[in-house]
Length: 316
Image (tube, rainbow, N blue to C red):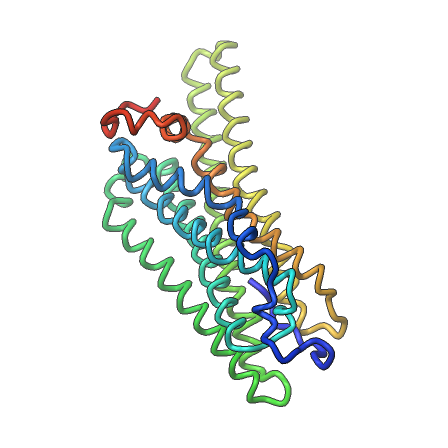
């Protein structure tokens, strides 16, 4: 996702469209680190019957979004970062930016839906299966992709309208740099922070309840303390990595239009790549934490699934 920045292009634009001035493009396409982990997640959920659950379908859809980020956004962003496409405001580059915004927003909204799923699983376990079923998950997935597509289309339309204005139109600035970030990032972040805070408090309450009903033995106290630390660590990693990757970029593009000082292009590119790296880390955060996914990955990587039918295997 790249903010719209006004540059002096008199010495940059050439007769050849700058988006096509890319060297070693094949090398760039084959070096996207986001692909392997997400492929493993997708294959695992499709292949193993044990993983056919509503929660894992959300993780599957998230992996598809992150995979598309790796296939479409990563290589083109890398190629264009090494070319002068960043300075060109042509239709081709705006379409590429729309893919960037749409897929990145899809990834973020999926993380929000996963937090909602985890809330019901931890805080309301007795009603979890009735509230988070296959139908609800399908609605969540369709909603994530639909809202993201609308945001991506709106931003590119706002960008095209800017070309008709001598200066940037206020409504287009609001769409591209205020409304878009609110829907794509700030609102999902607030929802996730509130949900994970409730999950953390509920986990602590459950741990204290267990501790009070187990005769206050040292062993049970140690177990509860260990569980609390594990829950705290997991939530800290989930939220910490997400906020570390995305917050600097969105703060930059939100403040940029209202600032008289220009942000150096290398800074914008660095923040953009930091944000995109979250798609590479998601499989490790949301899948590698679960032992059954680790078992599935080992069977896939070792090629064991090609030597027989293991679809109904018990994943530990």
